[in-house]
Amino acid sequence: MASTSALVKELRMKTGAGILDCQKALQETGNDVEKAIDLLRQKGLAAAQKRSGRETKEGVIGAYVHAGNKIGVLIEVNCETDFVARNEEFQALVKELTLQIAAANPTYVKREDVPPEVIEREKAIYLAQVKEMGKPEAAWEKIVEGKLEKFFQEHCLLEQTYIKDPNMTIKDLLTRYIAKLGENITISRFTRYQLGQE
Image (tube, one colour):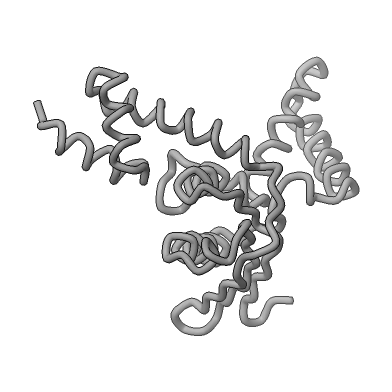
């Protein structure tokens, strides 16, 4: 079995949590790293939810231009204090978000940003597809809702799967940084430019 310090190091690498939090989580879970990860995520999520109501007036505008100069991203990420906005870890988060946007091409920050007419149009398309496939009428609504969820996961940045970790969404990544930095963090807006596209 790995030494406690090795387990703490592994847990820190996987979660980004502090040494004391990792030690405590390992003690509470009998040195089971997977259970400790779950415990830290639960605590981080709880801490992040407490902070979610706080106002975010500071932050940065992040920029990224992909190699070859054919894709560029601008993003506004906000936090509570200028101190955190200048923090290297906050800057690293902003960089990760610009990379995500460049690679995954989301359209909206969150599902609440999707205009109602877009949702209705998507539902109509999905309903027509389901009818065309000959599915039983009793299943139509459920299938359409499932397809709409997939739409949100593809088009809303916070619901996208993180390009560097398929087990995590961007919302999970944001929550991890909120727990780590101790401040609420929000993504206000972004723009993705691709050469030749409007």
